[in-house]
Length: 119
Image 1: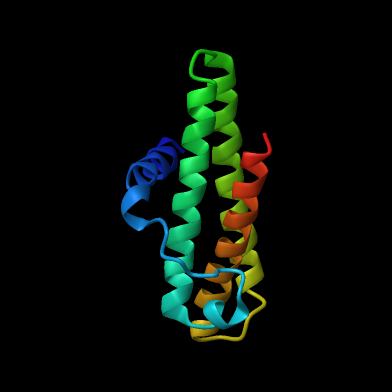
Image 2: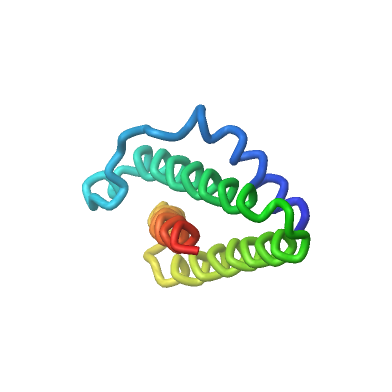
């Protein structure tokens, strides 16, 4: 669990390098290209990590809130991955499984970013 959090935190520090690819990741044409889909995931994850860092900065003086924030995000990551794995099981075999899982992660990550922005 700690490993997941630290990898998410590490990605937050690299967000400057990967953010802003300019892809419209809500566009089905973009999401149907596996290479653009991967770039969308990188972009969405980077934006989410940036939002998470802002929340951390807002609550840096509250140890209880920081712990709750961390626990909340780790729980969400676990749920997202499980849901996308399950969703991809309903896909046709071959590369469709991986693409379905990645598309799910893009959609859920973009949605989560909006949720965190509203906190």
